[in-house]
Length: 549
Image 1: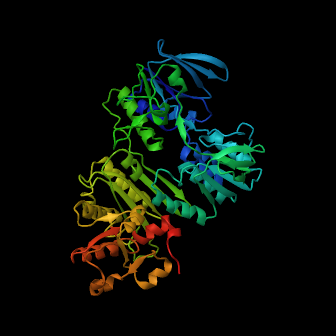
Image 2 (image 1 turned 120 degrees about the vertical axis):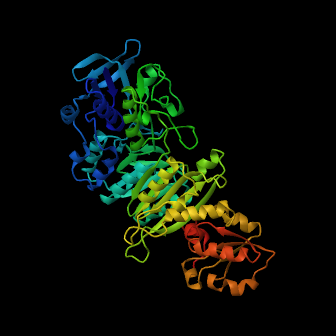
Image 3 (image 1 turned 30 degrees about the vertical axis):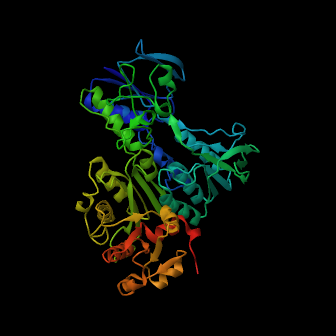
């Protein structure tokens, strides 16, 4: 069998090497239009700052090494310009000219291309770059040799934030422009606020709710939608990607959401013997069952392996993806899996959320750091829809656990049952993931009732009185307007100061003491709800609404 793979990197090379391990006699040709068929795409931003010191470290495999180990015919600088399904052949443009190559099976792994926003003056700009591959990186590094002072990153997604950090680490003054009202749109607003605060603390200017509409002076100045003018010696476009579908469309292959190539559960396209994997395809969002575009390395690698299994005759199915990702932003990590609260509600799901704060390891052991987790779930069935986390350490561990729980069909009722390794340097006897389960079960069973940070004002306008159960010395860090201060340890003795006919909200620093207060008050006949995430979360997302004495 002769198998041609168009595009390397994650999906294409995973397919090629798996095919060889299963089909020693197959002729396997990998065609890559660029110079590098296997490189560490996700590592590119870290070479900009010098954190990755050797460019060659980004080149995972070479045609020679792939030939030696896997007997693969890898051809860089070979661009497929046409697919001819009727003759089962492809037209290839290389440095010598144009050639035809036949196939028995064809795998498309063209990836995604940067989304280039419409901006007046973009074509005349000579200092604007995007980052998707090694040649892109080389152009940026060449521009950095001119010692620019001011850099602008347009787009505050994962790659945009990584580029902002690494440009700042290199010594540039960095501005981020994000059209959405927050950075890192996959996270919900309050969780993204932790990231924005970290960016600002490290000296990066963050502009949200605005977009770049015009470049002037050959890109040296950027005009925003509000009329503001920003100087920029170096500009990185990172507003997203879209499927590279040109070949597929021209070959009559069906495409769907966002131009993504449509495939069935075996990665078969609408044209016989042509398969597709990676960032170019439409996948099923595993939680909702709806079409989605999920451009991540892990699903692409898995898809490449699975399509090889299918072609080799093994039974494999594309089960979909839930979209699990993480980003480091200076001293903070932010990660998410599954659906955020906003998307879950848009999908019409019955949604409850809970936030918990804990430590990445035992609090009494040195250097314990804060971990903030958010869980999105169905309060009736306990189905976990998604999770988010921010903190200095241990975020990857917790979100990986929760992603595994979602993939494995576990519910909130299973989270307290999960058993983790525990010793003081590594974790806590009750891990933050266990705490999520305990808290979510309390909500599901009606033991606790909560409101979210964005509901506080409306609840107060309805007449609910806020009780802050922190100690008086804590109020110096900020306090809620119009709140009663009743320290938790005094609450039993001072309960007679409250009106049983009135409705209350309780808050503390992180939500634990206020939960204790909620239970105390409810068992004495009071109507009370807990402010989820409490003061710490509210201060992160709405600091301007608090009072500082």
